[in-house]
Amino acid sequence: MKVGLRCKVLQCCKIHTRKLLNHCTKDMAGNNREQQFKYLLILDFEATCDKKNPPLPQEIIEFPVIKLNTRTLESEAVFHTYVEPDVHPKLTPFCTELTGIRQSQVDGQPHLTDILNKLFPTWMKEQGLLDPDNTSIFVTCGDWDLKKMLPSQCSHLKLQRNDHFRKWINIKQAFSDVTSQYPRGMMDMLRKLDIPHTGRHHSGIDDCTNIAAIAKELIKRGHVFKQTSYP
Image (cartoon, rainbow, N blue to C red; front, side, top):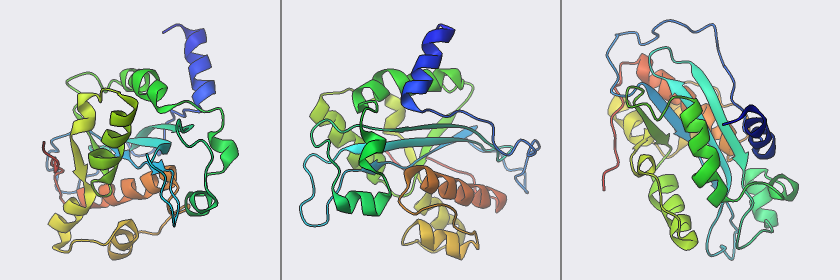
């Protein structure tokens, strides 16, 4: 991609790719157990919603992914964009109250079609995640994001999902494997692992940050992440 076009895409979508925690450069897994995946792609969608009359179809309004290196435990890069809904472009007051996402944050932002067809694949390529040697898998808190939400919206928009969206790790299952307790949700995992919550709950990017912290702690405790979803 030409430099000028790349800059335009980044500006339009508010995609932020940055180095985080650069001081963490050595293998942090205490027992040195080799992970199956070099990178965990922490994902947490936010979507249109209403308390009394849920919108149909439900549509993604925040698309965040954090790239976590399983060897260094460094969060190497972030993809983050708000999404303008196609069918119900006006957010409900309940949706804004729950997620903190305001109407002005989705107005004029990319539609999901552009993100899935152009913007996210470009980011994946720039991050080397399409290289077969850089094994990666999505990590979600539950199965809703990639089992229900994305397939449902892709079906409505007649979009073909990339194969990498068809496999993921439910971090609740990973937590259960380590602690022998199946958690109620993200906040429950943070409390039981004694990890302080940061940011706003139900902000997609903040939830990703907290899920990444949980993943790091599980790796430190010797957990080897394995795919939990299968067709």
